[in-house]
Image: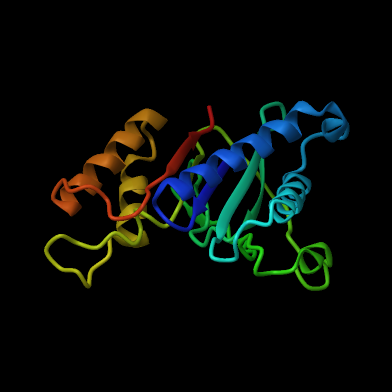
Length: 205
């Protein structure tokens, strides 16, 4: 899976997202890239190289989190290029863990050589083991940074989100999505979010 947050909200942002999707599909269609299993960091490096080859304007910045779920081993491995809200893991005992794994966003304002030099930019793949009942929540910053309709200085915030997740952690993934959406509508007085909002809920069986 991958989660992308591209600067801008117009047609140009949509085109960049389509471009990212095609890069991921192209990488996965080449069996040579999958010989030793899918590595999120290697896929990320492939995307960064292709991104620079297209000479995309320096005005744009792309934040990207790439994750690989191994069904057999029940593990989730991910690399992060700029998504600053960490994936949230709530285990089957109710303990909340923030999977901190930062990395700089993708931008042609940063020379490709700097991305390729691990002493300057070093993306690390983080792997977690999942047990039955564990909940994994991954999101862009859109929902977290949404301003209140009543108070423009107040944000929805990570604290409110985690409270919903902890209250609904025993529910199925689809029910958790509905609960988050409903709480957001209550908070925002049903207005449309001011930023793009994307999130994913994964529940280990």
